[in-house]
Every structure is written in C-alpha cells, then in structure tokens.
Length: 415
Image (cartoon, rainbow, N blue to C red):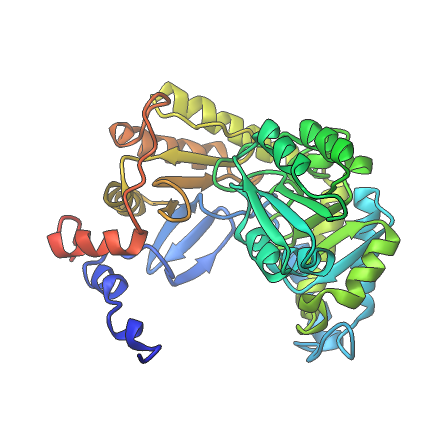
C-alpha cells in the first residue's frame, strides 16, 4: 500500500473551500491588535490570545527592530551550540525573577517547552498523568517520553488520586495540568492537585500558557492560588500575553540545568530569533510595570460574561478572558462563524475532535467598550444558535469531514 494513498482521497477541506465555508488559514492583511483586516474589511478580533494587547505596542515592536539590527534575523543554530544570545540569558533571568523561581530555560516554542520538559524527565519505567483537557503538547510530550501515559477526567481529583495510588513502587510519577484551560477558560483545581501530588510523591508541572499575563497581576495560576513554591515546574509560551513566539520552563536551578542538557526540543531546534526574544522581554517588562493590563483584560471578560448572560447566552465555566460559547453542532458552528465574519466579528470555530462544537472567544486589555458592545450585539442577534447550560454537548464527528457535508449541501455557500 502506498502511504500517500490517503492524500488523494482527502477532499473534505477543498470541498469546504470551494463552498466558501472553510474557516482555517484565513489570510489577514492587517492586524492592529483589537481589530484585523480580512480582505478589505475590518473585523473586531475576538479570536486572539493577545491578552494584554501588546502585539501592536510600539515599545514591543521597537525592541524587535533593534534586536534585528544588532543580531540579524536568526541565530541559525541551537542554543546548545552557536544560537545562544545574551538576550536569551536575560529573558531567562527576568522570567525566573518574575515567577519567583530560581531558574528558567527559554525554548523555541511553548509547544516544545512541554515536549522537551516531559520527555526529558519521564522515562520507560515512569508514569505521566495528564488532565484530559490538557493541551496537545502535554499529551505528545507524554507519548514521546516512552513513559506510560495516563489521562484523568478534567479536574477529577479523586480519579487522579486513585491513579497515583495504583502506580507500582519504584516508578516515577509526573502530573501535568494546564493552569487555565484553553477550551473552557476555567482554572485547574490547583490546591487539590498540589495536595494529592505531595501525598502520593508525584512531581507537578503546570502549563500556564493562558495564565501568564492574566491572573494575579499577570503572575499566573500558581501565584493566584499562592502555590508557586509548591509547584515543581511551570511552563509558559510567549505567543499569548508576551506578544511574541517562544516558550520557557521555570523551576529549581538543578532541574533547569538538567533540562538544558537533556531536552531534545531545546538541543535540536534553532533558538528563538533575536526579534522574538527581544519582543518577549519587552512585553514582560511592560507587564511588570503596567499590571493594570491584566486587570483590564479580566474586567473586559467580566463585561462580556455579564452581557452574554443578559442576552441568554451561557459563557460556560469561564473565569478568564477565554470564553467558550457552545453551539448546536459542527455545521451550525460554521454557519454561525461565517455570519459573524459578515457582521464584522472574528471568532474561532472549535470543532471535534479538538472539543465539542463551539465558538471560542478571547478578550484583550485593549478592547474598548465600543468593541465589546459590537460583539455582544452580533452574538445577541443569534442567541438561539447557542446551547443553554442544561443542554448536553454535541459531538458530531470529525470536523473537516462534517464541513464536506455542508459543502455538498450548499447550505452556507457564499458567492
């Protein structure tokens, strides 16, 4: 059998493109942070994780420009060899200080931070435990590690406790959770997780990609719960609040030293570009100097949750600027997404197998009340298309194949 045989038979995405209902890889022609340009139309951006609104901040852009002028466009090598800059070392030092941890390791992406951390620490005789709602990079890190991967129901602490208790003596135990879950906008049950890990002798990693810059003046989930000292490692990404590209892991110096010499994703990947490192460092400094940005992002999210409730739309369990709006199915999600684009609002359609059908919205510190009201009006006019709190989630098959069904029907085709 030709391994490429699956390629010629895959037509679902092209069918959806031809029908004008394909929601991915949209070519934005402008980005001002709170608004973007699609073609010749300006849309309110409610799909970005730019929580602090710093991607368009002149200070961040100038830091990137200066770094390119000083160091060029690329390091052309791994940090392990020729690709380490003073910028990377400075970013590590300031991240560790910000989190109140002894050390940090900067890695090329947030995805690779989880991949490298988990696979370097867990081996064939160990067990990795991951929340079922955790990010794909956590699952992939567990698979890459050769350890046994066990997933437990979202925030189900008794299930985690039972699973940890069943691990044979002598096996290492690593628990990995998100601080803020990207599909629900809710928080991990960190106090209970910490207690179970300590009692069962497990180490704990918290991926705080969506907590950094948002909770507790931007210091994230562990600080929000007052538990930073009792969490072994925290992984972060720069591609959200820090308005850049890259990732890091922070923790005790001996663990970080080990990871720098064993994490394959660090050793065998080119280091973050000078512009990426400099812009992340500039954004981190702005976050420290302007903690109001984290508070404003949360205030805007509260405004949206209240406004959605008034319009009969449930914001789910969201406690952060990530707000999921559950819809009635894959086809309905795409039709709704397309209508909102036409109404001048950019949202993210989330489809199986990533999660049950929904629109995922994210809000920034720099969104104005005018922006938020415009979004609320567009959503409120379509309130009947969203699920209520007491309605079950719908999981109606793999997303792109369902798009093909919609394309064939022509139900939402656009000229």
